[in-house]
Picture (cartoon, rainbow, N blue to C red):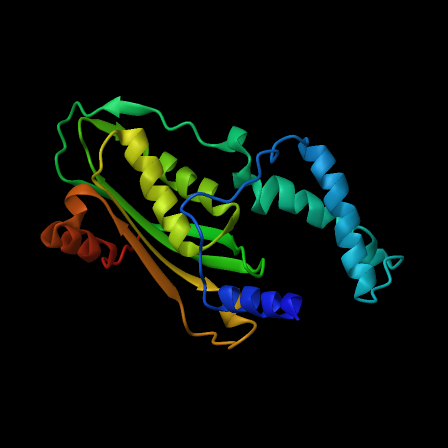
Length: 225
């Protein structure tokens, strides 16, 4: 039957880690409902899932789970879907004329695989070469966190971070490398707890092998305090 073939195809896409676009797939009416309205709907859906699994939601430990999960989805782990939460990344004139690359490494990534809704946990390393403007260091972390807080594939996340910084800084000279563990691989399916996924996106001068090599050498440096 066609429906069974479709299910097998969708399962295969998830296991093969296929993405469809560098933009997060959103419906045109994605922001029609308020956050509170979304929480109310998701709460009922989570309750239905748990009841379908056979759980007794009258138990004190489980009774509040649907509401907790709904609030977590909307306000926390998928909060990056809300354009109002996009960090304002003010830029400043590069008055000190720093002309080398700036690298922010070991930025913590907490995201969620859009194929199985399981965690992606790892580190992002971001760099840029100033084109006359600079951005506050913490804003780089906030941009990573914003795009991570949504259903994602790692390839898309890497591209979105680079594109956003290119726009903010008005330069193509931006790079990002992410090394992360996917619990959809580590805790289910093949259940390989040792493997991690590395993705990269290099723009402008970072496409040059020498510049790219310099960036990769920087992120290997061990930082101790």
